[in-house]
Structures are given as structure tokens and as C-alpha cells.
Length: 531
Image (cartoon, rainbow, N blue to C red; front, side):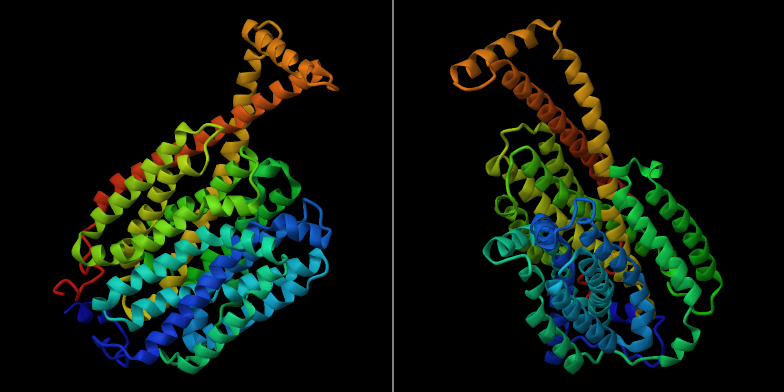
């Protein structure tokens, strides 16, 4: 019964989705999922090893972040564009080009001899690879019947969340065991296999080359300026005092002009580059909002934990990866459970449990101290991993599960874009709060560590005595330096606590917000409830 409702509104040429699915399509879909895993993993795998790449390319500290920024800007433009390209070229052609192009750009990145080459290759890699991600979400809800959704939705949810989480671990291991070149070379063989499988096995749809004549070049230019510059502003703004920086200011202006052109074309072009009508579906609009916030949590915590362990505990990338592996493990274990629950349970309740679980994990982190290590971080990480999967599966089903197939490709691009933009906005917010609150707490703490303070004087005298016992040191200078370091560390810790507190409020509020959604008409396992 659920099949009929989901395919209502589809073009007459498309038959209803059968309740069984051929092995060929299952293998094709698994190849697509693996391709998506590579594309998402590639962001975080490199982030853990930027220092090694910087040394290898003799790049400055200002240039090296562009290895990440170029990839993210290019990817964020491609993700919404992929819906139109998929309808025009077919899933088979788009996915094969994306997988092959991503593989070739990975191989080129490994051969880069200077930072300029690396930035260009990373941009190509991000742009072409971005086409793989929405195609998988669209395929999952196009070719599988609702009765199989309890299996398929956790699979794509797991890949979308697990890849960024384990990225630092994998990246740290590869760059330690081999060299930074292998961060890119590791994509080559799997990439060739994925591209070959995609070309040979995908047969979900047919191309519509007439759309090329209606391609909205102005819309594309507007979207590229709008999303690309927005990503840059969010990435660079927090560290450069936002609009006080000339580059950020210029990009903010270009972003605004691009936004005007993009939205004008979206509402006036015969075939807009991105179809925003999907947002008229209330469930899709809510699903996208939740996906945006999941992006904040997913990318925000994947950033925060390593920064804490690196800055406060002095861990290297390998040690950070080992300490954070628990979250990935928790996701892996929870994925099949969340699939089963999605067909037995109200999706809203499932999301609520997930959001409150996430809030509990971040609230736990508000009690942070400088001594926290693997065991202290264990419970928050398990809560983070389990809650992420409990949220992700129902969000996918609510957002994409009730759309007609002819809308799915465009909607899938928009849905994935919201998660990436959530990540970009979240990181900008987190960085801004960390910088501002760090300065605030340092000023406050410094007031108490002055010459007039009896407690500070006593502490300084005790430390000076300790240093005098260690020969060959200027005891007074060493004690002052040590005390200053302690104040800086405490200020940093307090700013981390503020960020975790902010995230707690956000996710707890969202947990309450789930009550406002209409009960989804066909839950994830629409046809699977009777199993």
C-alpha cells in the first residue's frame, strides 16, 4: 500500500517500485554507497594531517587551510547542482564521471609539488566528488521499496555520519604509517572499482539530454558565487575578525550579489538549476532543518574533540584518532538497531530520544577538566555516536520518504546541502565562541592573578621555590611563565565548556521541537511493519 502513495505524482512512464529488488541493483547501490563514503571521508582524512602536508609542500600556515577550504567550497556548489545533472545525464553517467574524476583528482593531489597545484587538485576533487553524495540518497529512495527502507536508510545514514567521525583516525594512521601522499593514493584502486561498477550496473533511469538546452548558466553562476563565497566567509571569518578582513568583506559582497541572482533565477527560469519546490513538502522542510542541525553536531564535535585533545592534552593526530574511535564504533553498532526501530516506532519519538541523548553527551562535556582523557570522554562519545544514528535514520525517512520520485533527485541535493551548510555554520559559530570566550575568560582570570592578590603571590612563591630546586633555571621567570600558561589553559577550558553548553541547549530545544512535526504518513518501514 505504501508503494502507491510514494509513487503518486511520478511520471506515467515510471512503474511502481516492486517489492523485490534484483541483485544487480543491490550491488550497484553498494558500489555507490562506497563511492559516497570515499568522498565524505576525504574531507576529514586530510584535516588530521595538514601539518604533514604543509611540511611536504613547504606551505605557509596561511596557505595550508586552503587544502580544506578549496575542497569544501567546490563540493558545496556541486551538491545542489547534482540533481539537475542527474536528470540530464542519468544517474549512471553522472555517478561514473564523478567517481572517475574524483579518483583522477586524488591521484593528481598525491603528485602535487607545491601548494598551488594542491589547491587546484583539491577543488577539482571536491567538485566532481560532490556529485556522488546526493545520487546515493536519491537512489535509495527511488529503487528500494518502502519495506526495505529499514535496511537501506541506516546504511546511508551510517556512511554520512561515520565517514567524518573516523576520518581523523584513518588520516592519522595513514600519515604515520606511510606518508601524506597515501591520503590521496588510497582512493585510487577503490575509485576505479566504483567507477567500473557504476558504469556496468546502474540502470535506474534514462538521460534527458533536452535539458541541456534549458541549462540555466546565470543560475549556476549565481549559485556558485552565493554558496562558494558563503563557505569562504564562514571558514575564514572567525579567525580574521569577520568583515574587518578585506578578503572576507569582498566575499560577503559577492555572496550577497550571487544570492540575489540565484534566487531570481530559481523563481523565473524555465528549468531552474535547483528546484526549491521540495520545501513546500512540510516533512521535507522539517527534515532539512533537522539535517542542518545534525551538520552542526556532526562536524562541530568532530572538530571540537581533536582541538581539545591537541591544545590541552598535547596529543598528536594518531593519539587523537585512537581516543575518538569510540564514536565511530558506537555508530556502527547502533545503525542496524536504528533501522529496526524505524519500522516499529514513531519516527518523531526516535528523533527526540536521539536529540536528548546528544544533549546529554554535550552537557557531560561541560564538566571538562585539563586531565580528561580516553575514559572520561568515553560516555560522551558513546552518547554522541548512538544519538547521531538514532537521529539520522528518521530524518532521512521523514525528509525523502514521502516525495514523488520525479522530485527526489533535486530534493536529495538540497537535503545534503543543508547538512554541509549546518557543518559550515556550526564550525564558524564554534570558532567565534571559542575565540571570544577565551579572551573574555582570560581577562577575568588575569584580574585574579595580579600582584595584589595574596593567593596568586603565594602560588608564585611556591612555584619559584620548586624551580629553584631544579638547577640551571631562572626560577622567577620560569614560575611566571608557568603561571601564565595555567591561566591560558584554564581560559581555553572554560571557552570549551561554553561551546558544549551552547550545543546542549541547541539539541535539547530541538528535541522538544520534534513534537511540532506531523506524524509521518508512511514510516521508514512502511511495508515492513508486518514482518
